[in-house]
Length: 367
Image 1: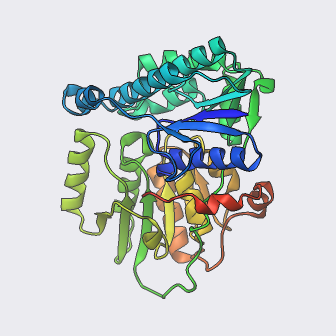
Image 2: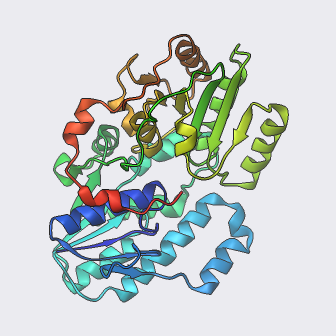
């Protein structure tokens, strides 16, 4: 039997979707004991709510900590990790937690008799992530780096979900035998529209956190240099810092063809001509995979795990990380030769790798 934990709510955002899939896989296999999360699946007796204390929220949201993205992430993960460790009492065969929020839980799980400690790594190895995040405000800091390395040491198994992530751990000295490759699934709600209305506007889309490490400045500069009269860039997501908010406000005021549209990305995907994922580091990349599922071609960097599903010139392109010129060149190519479709762009290899998970369609979607 397996106990799972995650500091993201069941089904909410990329991490929550990942967590929901793990929960449902364990349930389907008859291995789910229970799971800990701030917000379980409604009505699910296996879910245990881990509530934040009022002073935790006050400290993170109403002190200078709120201005430092890395410490906001650190404190929320640390509070969750310690709370789970305090309430964990009944051992099972497997304890599964996410990287960055499982060190104290791992210690408690081992002390009370869990057989196997399993670590989920949504990102590449922290050394690789740290190197790629030299571009700007990272969610990483020294405290997190040290904690992640200790979690790697304690874990009996580290689950990775792309070859990019797997190789980063091997390059960092983690034995391949300690790594388990898994496959993530796009929610069934992401599918192509029945038809695409012809339009002269070239619509470019991005979904995710709006910050420097995701390559937003690179995308904006690439978009700015496109010699296309009728073009549009839509970013679905929110900024993670005050400086990024001011940066985006300047761009939005300067260019009315750029817009932000927080909320459900599906309606925008059904109108998009291309999805750009300009990240400096991403262990997988749910958003570009959702775009492919909707028949939208993607442009992704060499430092994202989902690049292994891109077929050059068929469903998109892989470009050098940090190159605005490469992104601009591929955007122009897609403007001249569109690849949008009313059928999924997910490659057959992805379909073959997927497990049959009928319960995944029941995962609540939370934008």
